[in-house]
Length: 64
Image (cartoon, rainbow, N blue to C red; front, top):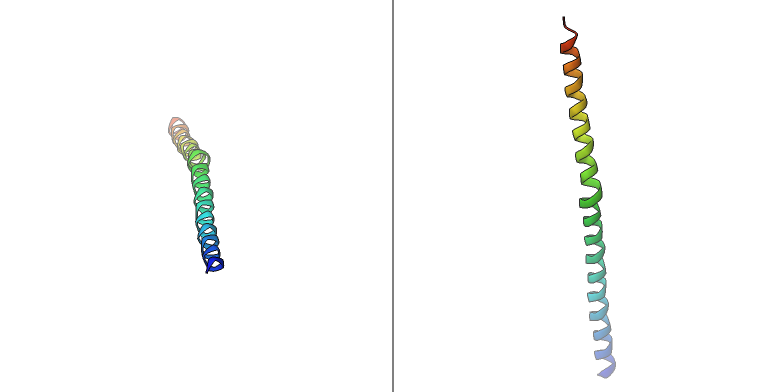
């Protein structure tokens, strides 16, 4: 009986540890995405919008 209880404690501990590790990895990846990837995409979109606006102004200025 004692051996079975030790086995169950081990399995429960292993599952809880695995779940905790997976949650920590997910949290780290999510934080990286929010802090690094998304601001870079927003900046690229802003630059593209400014480029389009500048092209329109340039074409309007040379219409005569």
